[in-house]
Image (cartoon, rainbow, N blue to C red; front, side):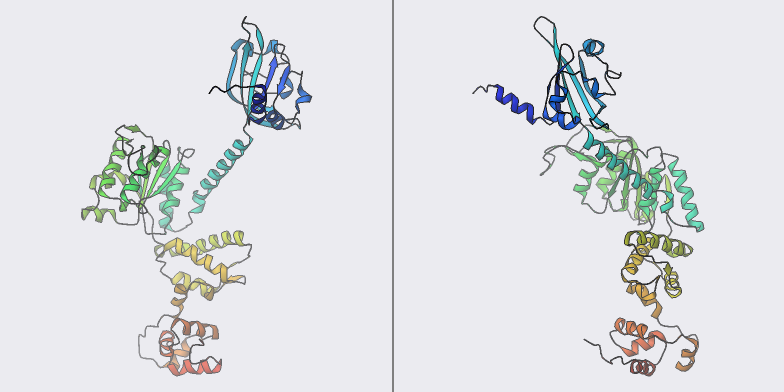
Length: 464
């Protein structure tokens, strides 16, 4: 059935359009002004009818400022203006970002009847762009050198390596235990390189199965597998011009290893399900907490891929090998959490710092950061104390004392600080109220522990 566009339908269409639309007659006078134009400009229709459009002060009209009359407007020469980003002046005086398009309308005799102009408000898009730019700026700040803390000699070598890597396009392999900050180093390389304005894409290779990882990295076409309902770009294509960070690259399967080797050699990818080769311009930074060389020797990692990845290797030392950096890291994390929580913690007590320095930190910097966050939950004073720290770190304070020579309990007590009530209660909890175990850990007799408990009215059995 043929649908007739009557006057009422056209009126509804005109009023419901999200884009602003206005028309000019052959003399350049406004003849119509839809509600969207009222919203975008702040001018009501009755305020603008019969006026020229110069009061809108478009800053781009065929490359010129808005003319005073249609005779001077180059729309007559070019007959059209395709989507052009510019600004118009709102009634209250501020500039509004818009996209402007225009067409002239001729009658059957070739005479000018008027002009139709459409205006798309870009205010929300500009705000979204600003948020993205701010987020990228914060991300760049996060990955700057200032966020990689260390004054030790080994960390100074890491900083030198980051600067050298950032100045080149070489493939980088970052090796180090979990929690040493491999992603921070990868980000610092990217955001200090000439690719810093382009995407930095991170892929955790251990988090996905082989099939999902292949699709994630290379993309797929519609129908390539069950659930592939549309074409999808992979992370390599999304990062075109920028950097791909492959975290835990030692976990990828032999099949993905072959495909990754081809990307490194040819800088080409094929989406899953198609045979079209697509060129990509990107830099690859890989990271692993495993010994890739041992994996190669064991036949679990391709030797040719290993040497393609380690063009420029960077090794991040574990925290236990750079303990002189612990006070700096502690100070940094305390400052961060003070800002987040509004607290004013100044630092660690002498005893807490001693334990932090003695602890081996199997989780490295990440574990240290989490320990400070844990302490902030419990600490209600200016300094973080021993009992504000996580249990596994506190236990170090109560480890057994190794006897080098035979020594009596009385002599040992004289050489050791006396127990405090809170310390004893904590030990009893750790040892499930086993007094003999508590005594063994602190180097005292079971009788001495019992006397302390009696002194402070601590029950001999757990109070539960």
